[in-house]
Amino acid sequence: MRLQKATALALYAVLELAADPERQMTAVEMAEKYGISTHHLAKVLRDLGRAGLVAAVRGVGGGYRFAGNAKRLTLMDVVRLFEDTSAGSDLSAEEARQDIAQGLYFVLHEIDDQAAATLRSISLATMLKLIARRPWESEGKPAPARSAAQSPAARSAAQSPATRSAAHGPTMRRKPG
Amino acid sequence: MARTPRQRSDAEAPIRPAGAADLPLVVALDSETTGLAKPEYWREMFHRCARSGFFLVAVDESGLRGFIVGEVRAWEFGSPPCGWVFAVQVRPGARQAGLGSRLFAALCAAFRAAGVDRVRTMLARDDTVIHAFFRSQGMMAGPFIQLESRLD
Image (cartoon, rainbow over all chains, first blue to last red):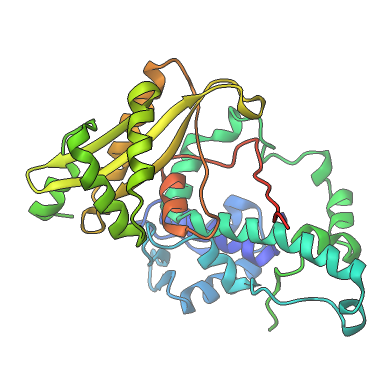
């Protein structure tokens, strides 16, 4: 599953700050740590601030701090701020009349259901415990390090319109605006 | 955060194997939380666990606070021996105090003592509360997938 860039940045930021709610970090510090665009991250942090998940601290030593409840907030609570997770259909009226399109949509919807249930079930506190445990080192699951499949060329191909709908399924779409 | 005396009592309710006298309390708690009384199911589960499983209850002076049920099963679906959690319930007023975690830890200890190194369960996809509980215990999606079909 691939998340929109803004969603990934939001999850980085929220988890980074939730790991130590007393700590404040600036957008520049976070952007440098993850090697990401400060401009893009600052926009994401403003959105998170409007949603009440982080709070801006002004003045010398200011920055952002976590402002939510890590045991109550789930990954889905963050994801749904940046992606449309409703169960709408992307099918055009013509597609919706075709059995093949409806069948494919039905199967892709199954994938989305599973993804949504997973995101709803993992609180930020659980996610932080998982990160500390590093299960990817012992469970034989894909490592987070960039692999051949995540090379820029592969990533570009994966984000082409033809493959993106399969990777995201039919219901998780970028939120307009 | 300071805990209330009630939370402390819930968290520290002793955990022990269920006895026949606990069965009506289990049926009542399950009925209260699910809205469906299943006395025959729990009676059968109790006798089955007496032979080959683990039926643990947390009981204090105020009564049954929660219970957990599991069994080691081997070679179903090609799986090596593995501990299965069939049910876990904590009285609604006793939640968020660590009792579910203690019940889960006690069952995992029983599984380890029985010689298995993996625990597994199955749950309704839309049951966010129980799903989040098992996630908080470190459980992840396993190598099996559940499929079903209508029998028309």
